[in-house]
Image (cartoon, rainbow, N blue to C red; front, top):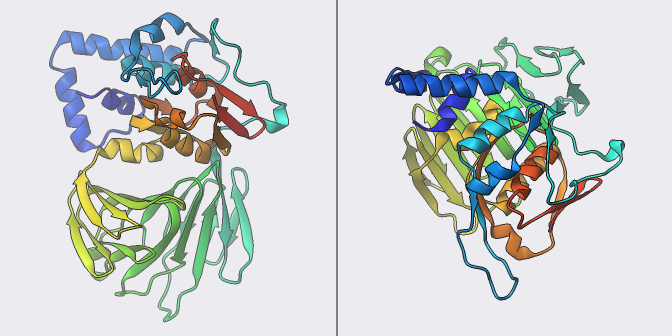
Length: 378
């Protein structure tokens, strides 16, 4: 059984099939039960100090020879069970990590500190007015209301024309929306979502992911006179009847990825259609318009929605890109070769950026320098 199921068990986010897998593993032997309870105890105790040097020395290793050009190239870190447990410990923002090989990463003024992302968004109403949504602020107008963490639309309409709203999630933000048909949408950082405030009965329910990433749990078509649900990203469309899936279409990326969790969806691009099954991902190459379907690690692709980062053999460039959206910082690489260093690891999104960088730095092959809102990889 994969360790990530233990993490999900601790956070009560297992689905039905995952629960069956976990229970089967848990009841298989006394050793499995004992192991789970050790991890649970470590999680609940959240120690204030974590001695990591010796442990990291055991789990980090090289996978490529040194380059004669740069003196070092393409190192990889195998961050296994220890990383997963340590990242849970680091939920304590005051945790102290003893590092006696390198100086502290950051010493920036408090006002320039890179903070963990929060629930925040900007809602643009049909008249063009903008509303700031953030924790502690209430908002209500027409059939929409917000408590600062959720945006809820009520279903009330027999209108022929429907107004559109736009939800912008900045870097360092996320938000949760319930559309008028009951569809639930988790919206990730640096994302723009456009959608109708209501849906016309019997007609296709269309929303537009202008850019960014969102996870959809679609209200079944049988509850809406058979009306299907369509997510548009440019010419690329995802058509569903009722299912759960993730769409990633960030600006600057060279592809659009749709990962199916449950149900069935049809992917359409410029007249070409493909059906997607659970556990698979469609990937549209924006340069060549090639549309391919491949097996997907669903938990890895949707981990952000459940409150953690999951990096599986990801390059440092890709990791820093993901982190920069959530923590809202710019990233620079002193040496382009550093971009290709690969890591595996799991981190809670509530973990301070300094703690994540400290863990990556334990390879002793790279370092980080923070200057206000810019992180330089050295």
